[in-house]
Every structure is written in C-alpha cells, then in structure tokens.
Length: 227
Image (cartoon, rainbow, N blue to C red; front, side):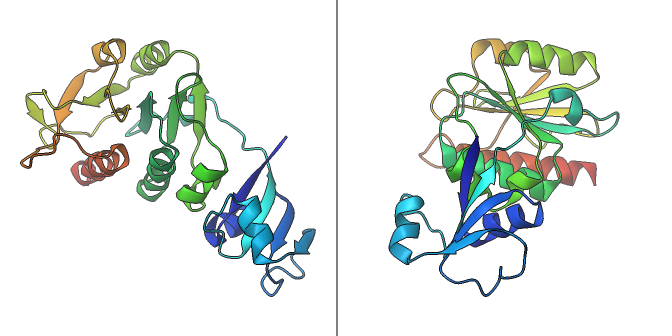
C-alpha cells in the first residue's frame, strides 16, 4: 500500500528518506540522477493528482508511513508526548506534527476511531515533519494514558474552566500533553486521567483557540519552562 505526498518540502524530505516509489514533476532539474523513477507531467495532471493542492510542481507516490509503538516514544527524563483526543481536522493534525518536530517532541498519539489520521494532506501541511515525528495509533486513549503514567509520565490537559494558568506548572518532568477535539475539548474519561489541568487566558469575545495554535503555545511554554 502507498500514499502520495505533494509540495516541495514534503517531496524532498521523502526523497532524502528513500521513501519515494515514483515521482511526478514539472521538470527534472532537481531530481535527475537521484536514483528514483519519475515522470514529467503537466501542471493540470499535478493539479488533478493533488486534488488541486499546492503541489509546487512536485508530487510523489511514497511507501506507506510506518506507525510507531507508544513504547518507542517513551524516555526516562523530560519526555514529551502529545496525545490527541478526538481531533478531526487534517490541517490541525499536520500543523501539530510540524510543531512537534520543531520543538523536539518524542511523538504524537491519536485514536484509531473517530479521529483524523495521517494521509497525504496531513503530510503536506506537516511540510516534511512526518518523516521524523513518531506517530502511534491506539484503540484506547485512557488505557494508553494509564500505561504512560505507570512509566513516570504526568498528564497535562487544557480546559477553559481550569484554575491554573498554563504557565503555573513546572514541566521539568516526563509530560503527556492532551489536545482535545476542536468542538468538544477533552472527553470526560481522558480528563479524569489528567494530573494537571491548565488554561490559556482568553480576554476577547472568542472563547477558544484553534487546536493547533493552542498546541503550539502549550508546547513552546513547556520548552521555555524546561530551559
């Protein structure tokens, strides 16, 4: 089974990681002699193959993304894992994976059902980060959180009703950061597994942030706290 990636960054990250099965490009100036099969096509073909996405002249059929195990993400000290509780938007998933790569997070976990999954659009939004970030798909988030807690992780969730601000916690610990769904936030059972619940200050009329924006703020605050 294979997937498709498009856009320059995603294309060349896949090329560097030897995952390209076949490339489709407007010209071969940058890939000639790179040892991959390719076909020069017109822009209309790339538009069609990418569903009118911003392909920038590059599209490739790639080997299926290999999902990781949760155990492969765990660390003994200052681990950082992001758990997505019912996220539904592919753009949010791609943006969160990109931020996780930039911040050096150890992995992303999401549910195998009722949740967005890795696909070619996610790969495009992640802008190559999917080649480096470990991603795991699990059947039961609550059981996964319990297992992580048994291995020394502390679970931090975000909710507008929390008493603590997101800056009130010392994150010098193995941390699981929960990002809830776009509409409902964290589910009740996942919320019950949180050791800390924090909030982002909201001073305007809108009461919530986009999930990927909130994740970015929370992740960089963890980095700031640790340094």
